[in-house]
Amino acid sequence: MPVDLPLNAKPVQHKTSLRITCPECGNDTDFFEVADSVILTTHYSQNEDGSFTQDEDESQILGEITFYCGECNADLTQFHQRFLEMLF
Image (cartoon, rainbow, N blue to C red; front, side):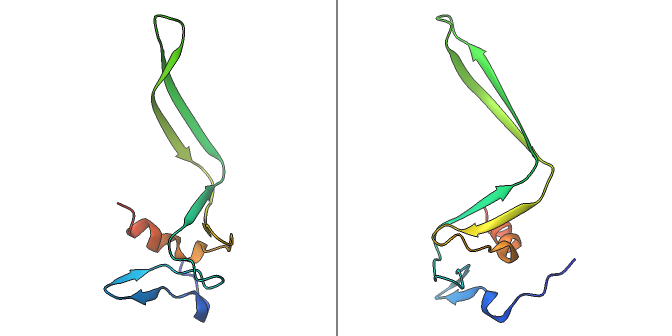
């Protein structure tokens, strides 16, 4: 379902690329996601000396994902789809 974005929540054009910029503080480099209801499965192997080494992990997100500014913690969830499109 489409979300109506406030006027100050549009991505800002920077030189040759579209960057997400926090409308609250101007940050355009540091962001984080929070996922609700996550199942994290981690696989380990036990070494000869009894210690463990992580082999791999898997995650399954069952709930909502929110997106935040890493500087001022503003909720930028309206930019999450753009973030996912630019995640390589």
